[in-house]
Image (tube, rainbow, N blue to C red):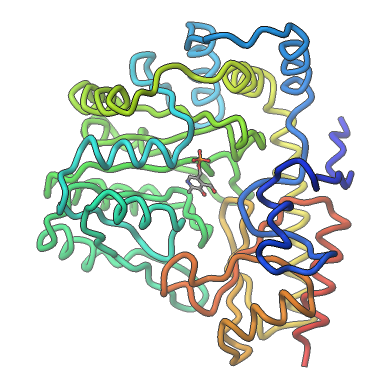
Length: 390
Ligand SMILES: Cc1ncc(COP(=O)(O)O)c(C=O)c1O
């Protein structure tokens, strides 16, 4: 089946964050936006068909999370991800960021420590600080082009910084790590010892490159289930972010009740009508599309890797094990971040996310969203190599 991933579609003028902010951020016309994690591919045909039917219906009233919806969600995780969420675990929210904010308020008090592992998806830090909690950082170790966890520092911080909550990014955005079972078991074991609840943000779990295996937090065993909140969503997987829906799994009833009480205090009730049906259609019918997409993304990644090796070896690809985000190490060029951004913006006309956005540990890197048609990827790689070649 040809899903048309090669087709370039004009998204300008659709209030699209990725495109329509270009001039506001000072990027010249003709810039290729490869920043925010939003793909330039239409959702699976079955999702579009369902949405078209419902739009035609013309009535967009209150919607409930019914049994058919739960079956679709459970079925997806059972077939594709390797565990079976129970019906009562599921809570919906308008997104994973909303769910993380809710969990911070529900499970910690002002001044409590919340631990993150920078460089990491930047809203985590913002949410901790905005909610008046103490930011605790366990920086990842970057050595020989690979990222790993500093477990000694992790344990030390849990012990000494009054940490009550750990926000795990699994797979990790932006460094592309898919954590191993051993790494996850160690983290989970330490969190249990020190009474820390784990938010496992698994929004990127459907993008895993060949040779790697995603280990869901829920597969770590009964004990791990008792102190975790697992965040999932169809939004990255099927390009539905603008519909605003996430499925949050909370196995432990006490945690679930606290979380639901906080949702209620915020006044959130039911999922959006179109979002819920889109998610259901995607989880019921989207698997072949996703398989084809992951193959296509591997092709884009190969293109980027080869071009850097052949034409710009000073810029290194930190090999991603998952996600459609490539983390490039520009430090070999000996330029500071502003210089790199300046060339990207004004000469190459490429909009990447600068590494320091993900914490100071990301300085010297750029994050590149590779979820675009092949011809766009080719053009971007060409502009990148030509403008930085010496
Ligand atoms: C790790 C991670 N979590 C959450 C989100 C955003 O989730 P949502 O749009 O559901 O709030 C993103 C988006 O890029 C992400 O990378």
